[in-house]
Amino acid sequence: MAWQSINPALPAAIGDTHTSIASVCGAISATVSSQKTLIDSIALSPVNGGLAVDAGALDFTDFQRLLRGEYWSAIIHSFQEGIGQGQIKKTLSAPNAVKALAKKLVDGEFEQDSQACVLVMLTANNYSVLQQACEEMGQWLCWPELISTAHRARDLLRSVEYENSQVLAPFVNSFVGINEKNILGDLPSLMALAEGHQEQSPNDELSALLDEKEALASTYADVLTSITDLVPTLSVNVNYTTADNLEGLASNLNSLDELGHENSHCVLMALGGTVDNLQHWREVFGL
Image 1: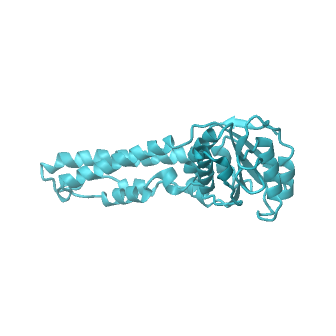
Image 2: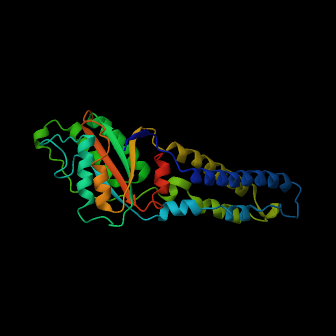
Image 3: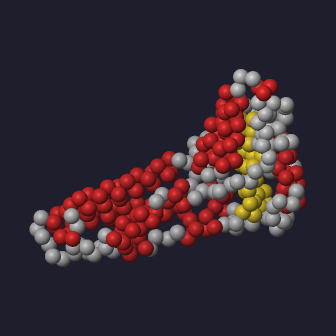
């Protein structure tokens, strides 16, 4: 099985949700403009609109599936006890990272009925590149162990006396995953804004409040753009394998095409579980 070099991306279903949310934001701005026009005429009738209905009709089925999918996670890096090579300045090549993960899968920690595994390899040839890659991917995925790996690489860069620097860590499984705010922003605030705006008379809305609503809708629209901008731009190597159980997955790992030993500072992330629960992650990583 060959590794692919890809750039992570948000799942298409999430992009569709962004489009729907942006439509609600635009409707709020348009209705506010209409209300402002009517304020001077002291209109007695409310501005018609179905903002609350539109906001309530937003479909989060795919998003909730992404959040609630059951899967296990693992991470392999050179700073874990018994993993990296070298006394102080720890290194780990891609092939050795894969072998270490294969051993980890059969140590009894993970679900035996796992059918599939998504693999994401960060490769670097020095601690500086490793730090940047782990920080960028760790912040996006909300994976604390990636952030701490970046910090260990940074500490080694800053250390003048490597002989006095022991930067080992136990195996930690602290993956949180992409959360609601990372994907959709502060959605409850938008929902409340749309619902509170429904069927209001212009006389009941002061100009200052309308300005605030318009600004909030505009800000939220900008947040959607910033969420997309958070997707890491770094290139990563990915792979995907399926089997009947963990032993089969581990065996498949040992049969993967080797990436080579040219990069001495690698981090391997794995997400495993059923084929269905990993569907969104396959889309994120182009598999």
